[in-house]
Length: 242
Image (cartoon, rainbow, N blue to C red; front, side, top):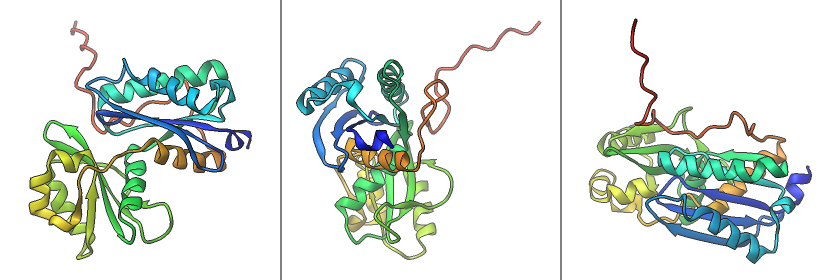
């Protein structure tokens, strides 16, 4: 359990905003940074350096590296995981991946105390939204409803969420809500939306990662891959027949 007793570096790059935080063993945030950009490759390592310097912690002094696994931006997720692996491999620190939707649901629960059904939404591009419905009435950490993430058009997502909710109020937030605010407002109602929610936060990634570490869980550096949500647009060309 040594990893739990040391500070943890956490970040998420599933959206257009990269978020980085240094989390103390107590769960307190020692330092955090966020920066929005079209691509995170030029910014993420700089944000990590700033956070570690402010917290006065070297990479070798970390208990683990926690990274948002997606779904979200294909390029952003690849950059995030590459940086996480690059920090974990030479130091032998455990790599812990966390669903970006799970982290967003935790942020949404903190912003909307008392809400029982939460719809975490991340912009998927191509007119779609990555989403998952969570039950926040059973404990401190929202539990996902169903086994799989959704990737749907906004109107289809709202229709499915209303159907599953079966009359209970659904509260939705995330970049997917911000992107399709008017359409989702018309389907779910004004009271159901929390626009401009800052998440998935690195603090939520860190909290969920610590829970995995306490259970003795972490990810294999060689085989860990992002949760893209759908196949990437760029694929290997097929070999010619014959």
